[in-house]
Image (cartoon, rainbow, N blue to C red; front, side):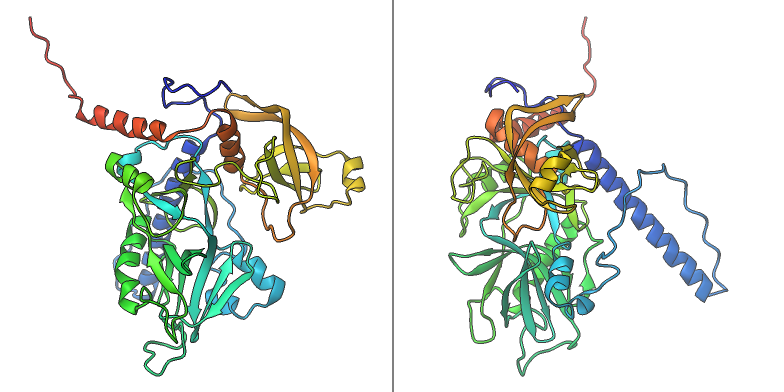
Length: 415
C-alpha cells in the first residue's frame, strides 16, 4: 500500500466486502422478522379456526445461507446455561458476545444510520443477574467476578421484588481503575429478550431502565460494583467529534460504531465496528507479551483439518496452509490457535480479495485465548502500519454525505 497522504480521498482501494456483508446482515434480519411474523400468524390462525386466513407473504430475494450456531441463545436459555460448569460453561459463554468487526472502510450513510461512542478500556464481559446473585464472564468464557448487585435478581435482599426466576444480561466493559462496569449494550432485561430488537431500541431501554434499579449508585453491602452507561451519540460531525475528543470518566480505547438497525447477534458482525488511533487509544498497534510493539505484525490463526490457517469469521477467511512437517514438528492439531508474523512480502490482494500472505510461524498464543483473529482485525492492524484510516477520513465521509443531501436536485438553466 502507498504511504499515507493527507490529500488522498477518503474512498480507499477495496480490501474487503465489509459493506456488502453489512447490507446482507440487515436483509437477513428483515427476512427473519418476516418469517417470525408469518409463523405467529399461522399459529394464531390454527388456535382460532374462525379467524380469516392470512395471505402468503410476498416473495423476497433468496439470501446467501448463513449457518446458525448450534448453541444460540434461542436454543439454550440463561437458566440452563447457569447450571453448566467448568469447560462447558466457558465454551457456552465464549460464544454469546456480539463482537464488532474492525472498521476497514467507512460505512455508507454513517450520519443517518450509525451511533458512535468512546469505548472504555478494560475487560469485555457478559454480566448476568439471576437467582439472587450476579456473575460476570470474560470474552473467553471464564469467570471474572461473582458478586451481589442492584440489578434485577442480582442479590439476596429482603426487599427483592420480582420473580425469583427473573434474569438480566448486560454487555459490559469492566474498567479496573474505578472498579466500574460500563454498560455498552443490554441483551435481556427481567427475562425480556432484546436479541431481536434494534440497537436504537436497546440503547433507549438501557438509558431508561438501568438507573431505575439503583445499579448506577455507589457500591454498598448488596451492590459491590457500580454500573454506568456510556454516552452514545448520533454519528454526525458533532457526535463523532464529541465521542473522539469529549471528556469521559474512563480511559478510552478507541471508538465503537453501532448500526441503529442492528439486532444483537452473537459472534463477529459488520453492523458493529471498532476504530482507533493514537489520540483515543493507548494501543493502536497490537503489542507482544512484553507490552512492546513488534517489528512485524503478528496474527493468530486457527489450524483446520486440511492444514489451512483461518480466521474466526463465519465463514472463515483462509490466510495460508501449514506444511504437514511443521504440523508434526510443532505437535499441532486441528482447532489449535497458532501465532504468525507477517513477513516483508506482506498481504497481497486481487480484486479486493486476499490472494496470499507472507506468514512465518512464531509459536502458540496464550492458553487463555479462545479465538483466532478476525479478518477485519488483521486488516485494520495491517492498515495501521501502512496506510491508516484516520479521523479526517471519517469526518470527510460525513461532510461529503451532508453536501450531497444539501445539493439541489435540479439546476435551472438561464439563458
